Amino acid sequence: MNRYVSEESVLNAVTSGLSEIKEKTPLVYHLTNMVTINDCANVTLAIGASPLMSFCIDEIEEIIGFSSSVVLNIGTMDKSMREMALEVGKIANRLNKPIVLDPVGAGATRARRELVQALVQEVKFSVIKGNMAEIKCLLGMDVKSRGVDSLENENSGEEISKLAAKILSTTIAITGKIDYIANEEVVIKVMNGSSSMSLVSGTGCMISSLIGAFLGAENNSFISALGGVLSMGIAGEISSNQEYRGTGSLKVSIIDNISNMNEDLINKYSKVSVSF
Image (cartoon, rainbow, N blue to C red; front, side, top):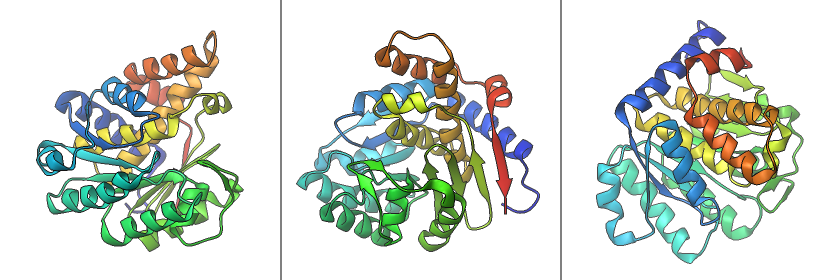
């Protein structure tokens, strides 16, 4: 990434990355939470990839070996999740598989803080995606949250995302009313989405699955993070502007619009800006 990056160039890269997913059908292994596991599987299929979920430590190395990428989501944390998360991360690193961390509710409890701190110290992640409270927690900052929801002021998103990318040496995606994708050089602000998306559980978890699909198709981490965030933002925005009966049909509409995502929709609806 350098100062020749533009809105047009990154959108071209995202549409190219989407084509790669549909051509390669990457297998995305998930160690994820039980609340949204089905939604994550369906959205992975919708974007053109293939999901695989397992909680059996005895088969993890073999599964990661034939997977294209890994999604690690700590949402419904328990003792076995704490043990498996580190093992999954280390295996993915050893086998050179790209891995996404979704540190759900990172600041909510001491156990979660300890787990994510261990993960970022011992595992190299291709992308870390979270809300403002979760990302600030990874930086050791005081945070305001309610369970898995952030109560943080998001006005500092550009600054925090770039700082996190530098300190954690990875691509950072901060999701919220405005989304921020950052590495040490570039920040992209994504202004797609709708407030009605908060009525559907799992949209954040599904973004991690979408990022995993882009990574699994051998796209770089920055474009993968942007592709996942932007796809969900556009799908949510279109769905919110369409007629739906209630929150159940809204979720179905979001997944439908992910399955219909293409170059024309990305170019028509994308609202992004690049800064350095």
